[in-house]
Image (cartoon, rainbow over all chains, first blue to last red; front, side, top):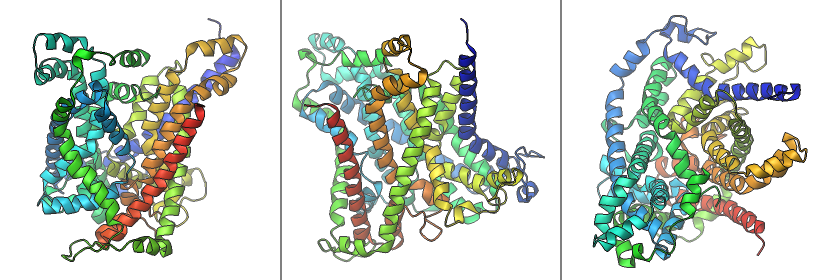
Length: 280
Length: 308
């Protein structure tokens, strides 16, 4: 293929633009990485360097030993994984209905999924606070898990119903002819075929909960119940300005699970989220 | 993308054998419906209603219906007017800048360039990060002494190297707008990229054969076909941004002097600092009104596209 000078200069332009984008996207993260490896002396120097002059793991050991980081990580893990598991059990049957039922119910369900994205959380949080208070679930992980379950459901339902639509209904018809009930069909045909979809949804719900801040801020009070986001937000307020190194290290450690999971699910995620939505 | 879509579109209708009866459907829906009703729908309706009451947090005092009193107070509350102004500036700037940047990135990612996978993965990073950590990260970036921004400005001999960006009356809002743009890049880029990839190749080729330049093809082929995606994602972005809370809470907590106090932040303070649940809910109601206006414009734009 002959490349004209004009085309070549266009390619050069495209590559430089792409580099600029990558710099914009990655630079803040790299800077935090750099700060996390700097010692206390280097952090108070007037003119900071991009690369730490004497890299140290001190901030990481500091972060892991103090501030209850591990305890908060355990809280986050507990809340997020329980929510993810519950979400699958609750969302799979409902998503099946949304995908297979053509009537009013599924239309209303899809309507709610879209509508739930429109309302400011601040409007829901006060009544939710009052409801959970009546149920004695304020400042408990159970209350937070229930809230997360409902908050992530629109996404889980949206994803799962699009996966269910990809399963040929003939399989179910055949099973029905053989006399299988609806629950049997769900358990033996739909759930196994949804396997990858279920994993993706569960992992995404996990990340959503792991990253969540607002509900945790309002619903949790006791320091020993707090999740990672909450702990880090308070860390910023109290001593973050003086102790930048441990703050950066803690923040990076807290991001690692989300980044790993995202790297794993990104391909499925974009496909499932946008299926049908683009042409709509 | 297209194969997946075709698969989805081709199915679902006319299979009598699988059709669910209404009672069956309800039974399968109950595990999802119950928590949704108790923890989402009822609170939402009650939240809308609370805006018309004098509800307080923590006090065992009866709540009274007070009609539009909260809303009259709102209109005379300069901090409220201020926060909505800031909220709209923030939402529109973030959405607009993000759209332009994301469109550029999506167009680049649809080209056969080397290293595309790396850019694509990087473009998703902000989505994977907790908003609190995004905020912490940018705080480190903006730090007046130890931050890299001021150091870069200093080394480049540019003005502004001594500014404390997040505490400066003039600069705090632009600074958090930049963070908002960064944090929301993934969703917008992915949506636009998917849209670009579903633009038909044939029309591109036909236009190329007719001698259209890349630029002309973009304006006359890609952009018109992309329009539904553009309208959908920018509308969603606008709504998400207008409701945004976490970033500003950690970065500036509304300061300095309310100059970055987004509506959600203002309502949060009213509700959980001062316990004014009724007043804060009225604020939430006002936010819903603004969002509804955005949606009406969006729907109007969509219906106009398909003349009856």
